[in-house]
Image (cartoon, rainbow, N blue to C red; front, top):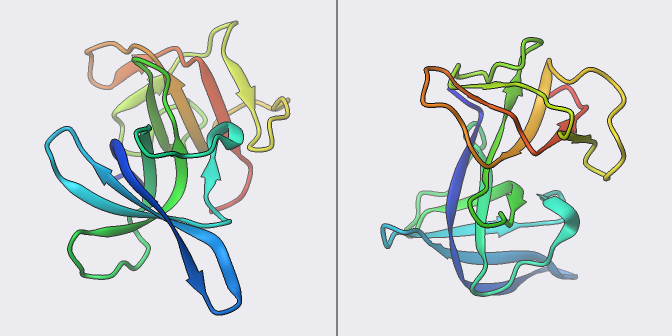
Length: 163
């Protein structure tokens, strides 16, 4: 099982939260999925946002949350976002641990790096090492229907921390 799970939907509301002396460091997003389900997503200063794009009402996003993190038992469900992607049309995103063979932890996706694959660190710098054996955010537009699926990603964000 993957440690990070995605929530994809349209942002219906963006509200800044206030906690003590800290104002507006955390945003509460309401997301509606294509199945008309509603979720709350908390974005704080520790949330990685691809390309630092501001999230606005009406945006389609993919928010990844840590399945191992505690969460309140409320309705609608509330998740703390570890990463947020505003995908381009037809783009998929996955956040997972990929081994040295570029196979995801749940064995559902294998990466085939191409010459056009941009490999970066979270701060936008080029990643100069060999990807694999790390958590990576993968952006891709197509994949095979094989098991596991294979894709040549458009972009990889390599998280160099041991988590």
